[in-house]
Image (cartoon, rainbow, N blue to C red; front, side, top):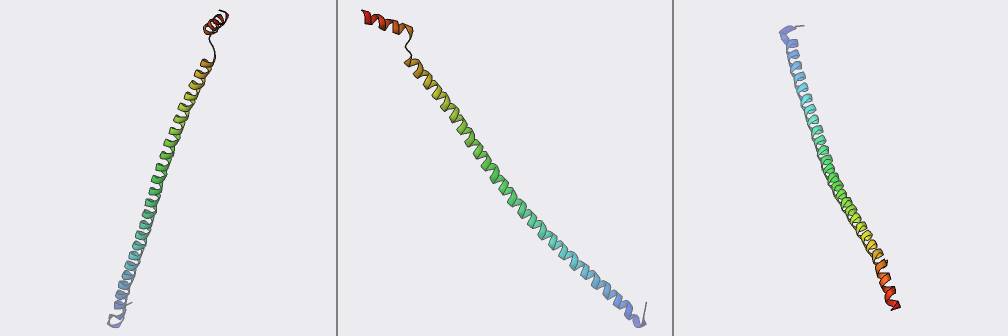
Length: 107
């Protein structure tokens, strides 16, 4: 497809250079888009990571509060049981004390 004075050959060379430039521009645009998408994804991941850390901290705080409440409840129940038992034992007269008080009344 050669023509006089090589006009067609020169046009083919210029067209191939233009195509190469267009391909380079397109690849640069694609690289920029991919880079922006990667940055967006990294930002979202960092936000999610921060949220996960906050959730883990909240869960650990609530678990510690739950444990403290349960331990305090058990200690309170033990105290109440011992208190009721001691009151019950103090209110019941023993056989020796009733015998001695009865004997003292008849003297």
